[in-house]
Image (cartoon, helix red, strand yellow):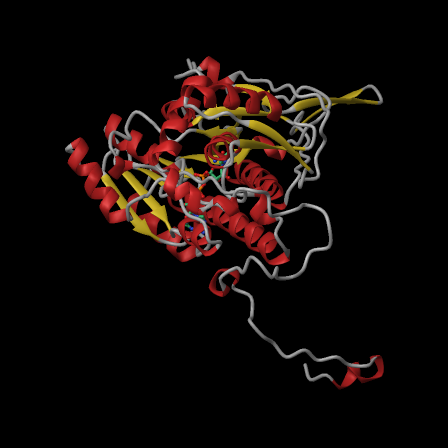
Length: 425
Ligand SMILES: NC(=O)c1ccc[n+]([C@@H]2O[C@H](COP(=O)([O-])OP(=O)(O)OC[C@H]3O[C@@H](n4cnc5c(N)ncnc54)[C@H](O)[C@@H]3O)[C@@H](O)[C@H]2O)c1
C-alpha cells in the first residue's frame, strides 16, 4: 500500500467526502473504518439522511466507476473494541490516522443519562484505543484527531490556538487554553484532548488536535453524482444549524431562532473542512509534536445566519419568517467571541466558496428532496432540552441495548448496615 491513511468514521458526513478526496486526488491508499452507527442511530430516532446514501459496498463501486481507481477499502469495525482497532492498525501500517469515529451530536448526548454515557464511553474509548494502537504499531505516524470548537465554550478573551500564558504572583506558566464545554458531547472531546496530550508527552505521539467549527453544506468537488453523496441531516438532533435552517425554510417557511439569536460560533463549509484536513495531512507536525488547530473560516451569530438563509430563500421563491423559540440549550446568549487562527493560514488555506453560494447549493438539495423532508417535518422542531431532571432512559428516545454494553437487568441486593459483614466476598 502507498502512504496508507486510515479514516476512522469514514462513512460519516465529513469522513466519506474526505475519503473520496484523498483517494481520488492523491496517490494514497485510503482505508475507511466504521461501524455504521450514525446511520443506525439516526434511523432509530425515526429520522434519516435527507439525501439517500448508498451502502458502503455500493459507494465503493461508485467511487471505482467514477475515478477509475481501486485505492479505497472499507472495513466494518467498532473502534470501541481495542482488538478490532489493533487489527486494523497493525495490518495496514498507516502513515496517518484520521479519527472522526465518534458520537457527534450535542443534543443526542443531552437526551438522558444513557445517551450521555454512551456518548462519553464511545468517544473516550475510540480515541484511547486508536492512541494505544498507534503507539504500539506505528509510533511515528500522524494522528489527525477531530475535536470541536465547542471544547472552549465562549470565554471572555480571545481563544488562542494552543497554549495560553498565565501570570500569577510574578510567575508565568504556559497551559492549554481552558476548556468550558457546554454539553456531555463537547465534554467527551475535552477528555480526548487531554488523553492525546498525555500520549504525546509519554510516547511522543505526533498529533494534530483539530478544534473544528460547525460545518455546513453537502457538496464537495468529488461528489460528482448522487451515488457518491454524503449524508445530510436536517432534524433537530442530528442536523447542524445552517443545514437545518434551509430545511426549515423549505418545509415550514419559518426559521426557529433559539433565544435571542446572539450565540456566536465559528463556521466552515464542507468543502473547506475537507480542504483543511487534507492540508493538515500533507503538512504533519514535527516528530513528537502536539499541534492544536482552530479550524473555522468565519464567525456568525445565529440571527445573522437566519437573515442570510431568509434572503436566499426568496431567490428560491420561499417567503420565510422568524419564530423565536425558548433556547433548549444552557448557554450564554450575549457574549464575546474571538478565535485565533494561525496554522491553517500559514499552510496556505483560503476559502473555497462564499457562504451564500454554499447556502444556495443547500437550497437546491433540499428543494430536490422536499417530499422526503416533508416526511420528517415533525423532527425539525427542538425536542431535547439541556436543563431539567434527566431520566436514566427517556421515554421517547430509546438507545439500542447492544450499544450501551451495560447489563439489561441485574440483581440488586440491599443490606442493612449490620448485615454487611455477612456478604460473601
Ligand atoms: N459535523 C460538524 O459540524 C462537526 C463539527 C465539529 C466537529 N465534528 C466532529 O467531526 C467528526 C465527524 O463528524 P460527522 O459530522 O462526520 O459525524 P458522523 O456521525 O456523520 O460521522 C461519524 C462516523 O463515525 C462512525 N462511528 C461512531 N462511533 C464509532 C465506533 N465506535 N466505531 C466505528 N465507527 C464509529 C459513525 O458510524 C459515523 O459514520 C466527529 O468527531 C464530530 O464530533 C463535526
